[in-house]
Length: 292
Image (cartoon, rainbow, N blue to C red; front, side, top):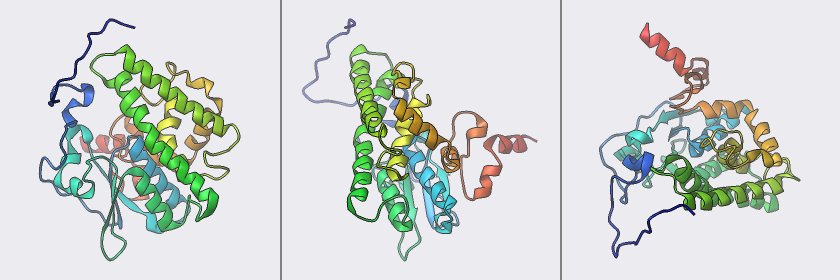
C-alpha cells in the first residue's frame, strides 16, 4: 500500500467546491436549476437532450435501430447538452429531468407531452412504444429486464468508481483504483461467462439489454473508455470482445455513436441531429463551410 495520509471524517460534512478532479465544476450536493434556459424544440414528436457519453449513446443507438427497421415515428431531434458547461442545470432541462443527468426525452406524440428520464427508462419507453427489442411477455422479457437493471446497478462502479479514480481524480490513489479495478474486472467476468453460451446478453436476440450494456462495457473492451484496456487486460474476456465487435459493426450503432458527440475527431461528431440527412454532413464539413 502506498503512503497516504489517513482521512478522519468530520462530524458534519461540508462541501469543498474545489475538490473532485476534472468534473469538480459540475458536481454539487444540491439539485435544481442554476439559471433560466428553455430547451429548444424541433419538428419531431421525440425530442432528445443528450451528450454522447455511454448513457447518451444507449438512446441514440436505440432510435437509430428503430429507424433502420422502418419506424418513421422514431424520427427525432437530438439537442446537445454540454455537461461541462452546465447545460444540465438550465431550468428547461431540470424540468425534463430533475436529476440533471443526460439523457432526457420529451415524447410529444400524444395529447400531453411525456417526460422520460434515466436511460433505461427511455429504452423501455421506446421498446414498448414501437414493439421492438423487448419480448412482450414471459421469461424472455424478464431476462432482458434482468440485464438492463444489472447495467443500471453495475455501471456506476465502472464509471463513477473505476473511471473517476483511474482517469479523472486529481491524484491517483492506490486503494480506490485497486478496489474499483477489481469490481470492473468482476463485472467483465460476469458478462464473459454469460456470453460464452449466448450470442447476445439476454439470449439469441439483440435487445435493449445489449443497447444498455454495450456503450459501457463494449466500448471499454474496444479501448474507448478511460484508456484502460491494457490495465484491465480486456483481451482476456474473449466472449465480451466477440459480442462488442459484433454490435460495433451494426450501422445503426455507428450512427448512434455520432449523435450529440462533441469530442474526438471531427468526422465522428454530429452535435445535433434533426434528420437522417444530417449524417451526410459531418461537423468537420460544417466547420469548414463556416470558415469559407
